[in-house]
Image (cartoon, rainbow, N blue to C red; front, side, top):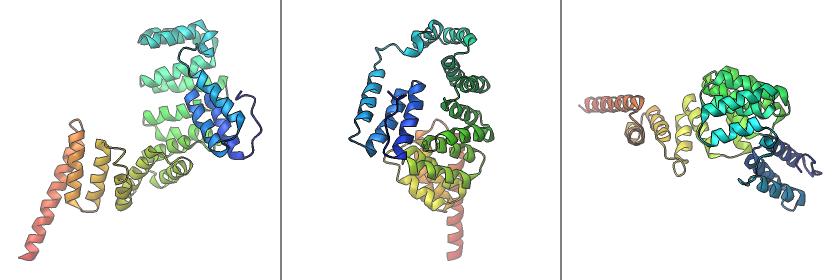
Length: 296
């Protein structure tokens, strides 16, 4: 049903259904439903959208055998091996299936290599997936993510930019580009990208990364305010670390220590945190000594 697109009343709903189709083509029905829901939010009475959503819900049924693997025994064997925890068996089956140049095989092969940290092999597989099915722009995003995971931030920019050329309303693409710029210490560019992502989808993770970008830009007060507003939903070692570092940048040593202490409690023997904690403590003691001398 997604391939036979209904008549749209707005460009926005057309964009959402285009993205939904991309997700459905790659078998990510949950992701497809997300964008059908966005279209429904704009046109809640659109029967075609409701029918598409019902179809996608049926496709999510775990008891339904995927049409992707039904006609490909080697690919089906790879999926079964993965379910059984046999990673080597999965790799062997995928490599055998890859001889046929199947788009889905290259995609699954890319996922396998990425999960195992073999980013060069993953990028090669995703590239072949895109070559065999140019409409599958998600492969470009996967290539960008592999480069970010590998720390090759500059190499992530071209594929994610190409992805966004085809998917201009895809908030996650701007988020990925923000992370790439952040990894390159280009914080102004990173903030532009994360603001675009937030404008499209006010996601809590996007706001969290925005706070980190602001900290790295030296906008400590703004970063602190933003990160503290997220504590009700995010209570990790990292968020308390950045809040503590923001207070440290503002020379509020007492609150810096309080937050770094929380970060240390939640962390697993983080040497950087311990170093910063002692550094702040030393700075606070130094400030106290200076005040004492001024009084004398």
